[in-house]
Amino acid sequence: MKMKGGGFNSQYLLYTGVVLLVLSALYWLYSNIESHKVEVDKGFKGEALSNDYLAAEYFLLSMGQSAKKIKLFSPAQTVLNAHDTLLIPNVRLSFDQRRSNEMLEWVESGGHLIITAQVDSEKLSEQPDHILERLGIKLERQSLAEESEKSELPVNISSLDNEDFLLVDFDDYLTVVKTNDFDAGVIWSADDVDRTHAIQIKFGRGKVTVLSDMRIFKNEYIDSYDHAAFLYSLTQGAYENVDTSVFYYSLFEDQMSLIQWLWQNARLLIISLLVVIVIVLWRLIPRFGPLINVHQPIRREFLNHLSAAGNFHWRQGHYNKLLTDVRINLSHEVKRKKPEWINLNKQDQIEYFSVISQLNTKQVEKALFNLDINHANEFIEIIKLLEIMRKTL
Image (cartoon, rainbow, N blue to C red):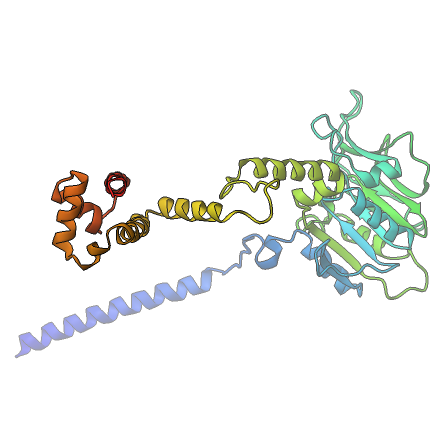
């Protein structure tokens, strides 16, 4: 009994020592290890994945500026009013001449249009920008001079506010260039040495702001430098004593269908093609029935109707119908010439015709009483037999 008791006490002491050791280790870890929170950027989520300007919209809303996303040229498009601001961050591929004129008419009435442009290059030279062509402006990609270096600092825009300046990180290689057709009044421009990255001009009662690029307003860049302040300055101070202006931005427009574009730009071509298609179909589509002879008399002869009826039954394969009429006519002829033939039975009638026509009884029976006729050759054979019998009367 003592041995058992001693063994139990040894095990108990061992377990107790292990537990105390583990607790001591845990206490040491808790006392000497500090916890740190690490923020991991998992990228944009939700609407920000498809809307590069969502952060800009929320920023303007937080500043008290009404801001909304719209889709241009859609059936439910929001009506743009005077004193509103519209930012179009893409290159406006769906803007044809008519849509561009409508947009400029809105600017003339007092709107503010903020746009960029497609870089002028040989591949895209055939795609006109109707808005910038009318303004006398284009966007070019320029290489830096040999003695100059790419600036690591953003552009200093000081012409928007006489007391302050804004730092905006435009693309150094994209520049706004005035063409020979430029004659508008410049409100301000953002210049970096010999390169212009933004320009705002007066157009009617409104204005147009042309930027070399729009990446400064995207979600990942809006909080850099003074990009947010620059965007806010574009929506403010344009119209005095006006508190109802709304900032709109359009991510994409409804594309014009090919048929609509052709109808607006090549209407005569579409009409000519339709006429050609109608003529070709008229020539190719098969006609049903013979052509009407307009020179025939209005009232046809009775024999023509009989001929037409016979042709119809022949084409439809109604051989029994045609033979029945011929047999009835033959029966009337026999009754007229041989009245006694009426009282003869079927077998006697066969014998009678066999004698006078020199045909065997099977041929006579086939000519007078066979109703199972499915082929034209059988019909022709029976008609020949009936004709022989008719001539022998």
